[in-house]
Length: 286
Image (cartoon, rainbow, N blue to C red):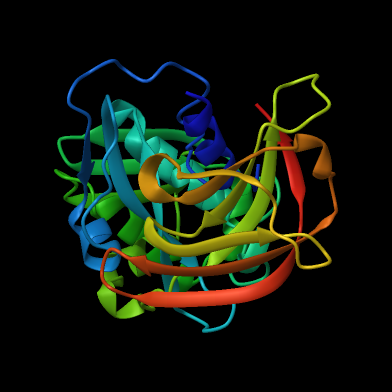
């Protein structure tokens, strides 16, 4: 379970890495064998979904407005164990953006204070009602981000955007949105380096090198400032989103210390990437 919480914090470092906050600290259903069902959009941009030991999980894509290429959106992988609220989860994570780790400054954030008031699916017509802050960001990238994020889900036929219960000007742009707005994802990236510890404890439990998508880790070394490798056992996290070091000496790791990471990975579509750089260690609590 602690491995699952570690991944949650990855995709939740904005506050994702995965509503993985849908994990909301609730227990994963004890179903065997485990299975991850992916949307066609997920499979298109990130390949076959990873596996889980137990439970039923769902892989999908959130399209964030690009700050580097105006009008374009960038797909990002997310997971949840709660199918019933998956559309709500996706929209709320879209509003939260992904201004973390190696993605800082890459996406246009939604206005501060914006809220999803309600989301309703009436036989395929999905109505999303936002707080008035949405009026500050009525552009094509916003429309594409909302439209493409919701259209990937089975049964969605049309989307209606409202602001405080009133029809939004975004509706016209939403209807025009299509895959031409999508900027293909870059090669895999190391997202952040984060140590985990139990709440109230002094020493960390493990150190996670979080990636921006499921990957096969070909090489992963965590080194001290003088180039010495940290001793411990290394394993892969749930959803293949991180390489995790269980350190032999947890006292070596302190918040904000520098950790050199040497890595080489391959994603599910064969995309390869590697790096050798210094990261500032973040510390999160379970």
